[in-house]
Amino acid sequence: MKIIGVFPGSFDPFTKGHENIVNRFLPLFDTIYIGVGGNTSKKYMYTLESRIQHIKSIYAKEPTIVVEEYEGLTVDYCKSKKAQYLLRGLRNTTDFNYEKSIALMNKELANIETLFLMTDAELSHLSSTIIREIAKSNGDITAFVTNYSELIIQ
Image (cartoon, rainbow, N blue to C red):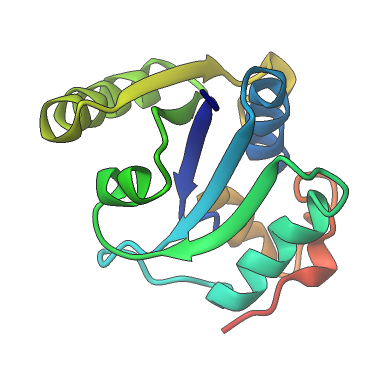
């Protein structure tokens, strides 16, 4: 039986913190789907196509990573991929409290287990929201986002 995980998010942008989580989950899974979804409550800075292309550029040489768009409930996406696990990264206790509620709901809705990893300490300050604010002010975000040039502002 293949062990399949889904790492979902809007990834606006996909930070080195996200990379840290995916890279540490890699040895545990036969396939990891990085599902780039839309959140109806968010206004995105980068186009969906460029977010997907950006993540693909990071994992171009990693055959166990599949990057694609998805719509709808994350648990439905997990079912469509036959994924047994949802993968999430945590920076702090605020993230944990938020993610715990979602994990419990996903378990109830679709019997999908959520696995959490703490982001490495040196990356725990990274936030897509903060990085977008730096980029909007023409600040240099190359230290926080690999292959930043792949991203296209909407």
